[in-house]
Amino acid sequence: MDIIIQLVLGAIGGNLGGALLKNLSLGTVGNSIAGILGGGLGGQLIGPLLGAAGGGMLGNVAGGGVGGIVVMVVVGLIKSMLAKK
Figure 1: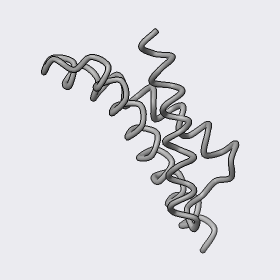
Figure 2: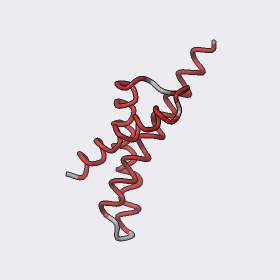
Figure 3: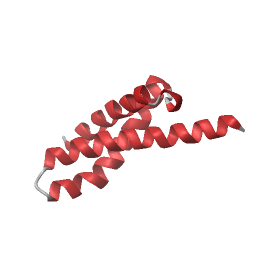
Figure 4: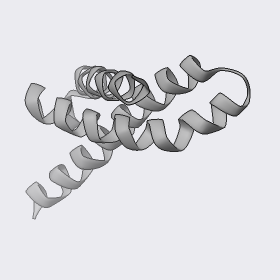
């Protein structure tokens, strides 16, 4: 159940990041895919850290959402740098 929460929140985070940073947006589908990947990664990295502090659900939410935004921004930056060449 935790991984599903992380993936869904990653997709939401990716789309939220795309809406806030329009110049790095990958479109709805691209933001969702990058967010899902980031949500899975972020949830696995950040989740246990916050989970150990007593916030299991908080770790899933933070890891999934933040991971989704971070990966979307990184992919958006790479895409914009390659487009300039």
